[in-house]
Length: 246
Image (cartoon, rainbow, N blue to C red; front, side, top):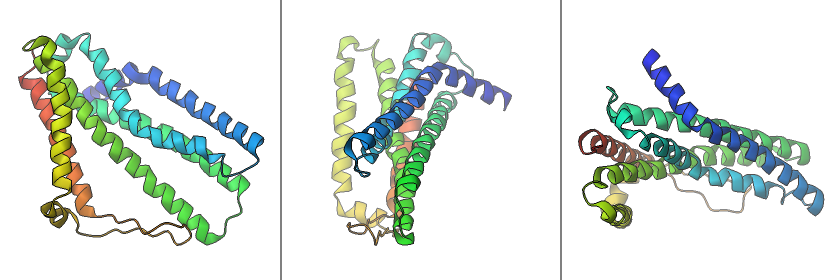
């Protein structure tokens, strides 16, 4: 446990500057929100900056991981000679980024919540749907961010595995590693077997007070994407452990 805590603290130090810059940006977004409110007089417009900031958090974890891994690349020989497995080292970075992202998103949610409470007198049904929508968006921002991050880690691993083998053609391999899985994934997602395997345990979400159709959600789809992310993560760790040389 002590070794894990030390590893986590080290990864935090690598990206803490970005983390604090992100918190400052959050407060700048709040100031922009208040400025929009004063200059438009429309309470709906004031949520646009906050909503954009929340959605852009899908790139938060990939950016944090890229910066952390880029820093490790400057002393890759030390990282690779660490007695711990690549999966442990990578997992520490992922959890560190998730913790930072969680704090940042919670701050944005608290800002949005305080604005809603101070400017709207919603009936109970609207409050229920607003809260439900916020709770639905929160984990999905994380899920999308984690999926993008899995590809960031994979591309980083492939880059270091090939850069001394094929040199300048590594970029072509990385391009293929992006295009081919995306193409295969699109084919799988549109196939009938995929729908049969994933569309079970419906969790359809309704928003009676919103002018939108019910949102279809299935537990099978979450399980499928979870397995893909885990598979990409361990593939990346295997590449780092077995195929990367310095």
